[in-house]
Image 1 (cartoon, helix red, strand yellow):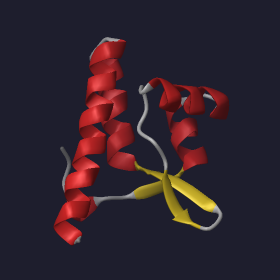
Image 2 (spheres, one colour):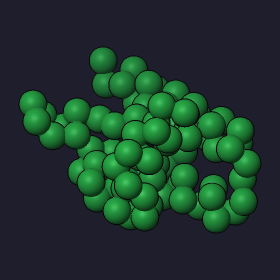
Image 3 (tube, helix red, strand yellow):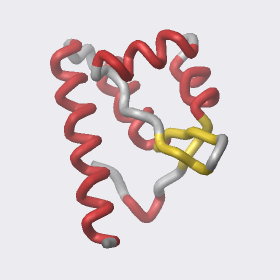
Image 4 (spheres, one colour):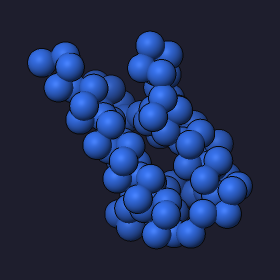
Length: 88
């Protein structure tokens, strides 16, 4: 899906600013499966993988339907799982 050697993280606030949406909309999109879930960066910090946000932006630019974006989000989440299985 993306080059794991170049994974970059950003804070949640940077992600929804990049997307041009509010925090509430960001949370709603996560709950609807239209956005990848956040990642814990520590006790009091949450972030997202910037490459995943970029892919979702490209999907929206390309005019993908909500169902197609939900499928993309599922694939991105599955990809995260494969990354973890390689480490453990």
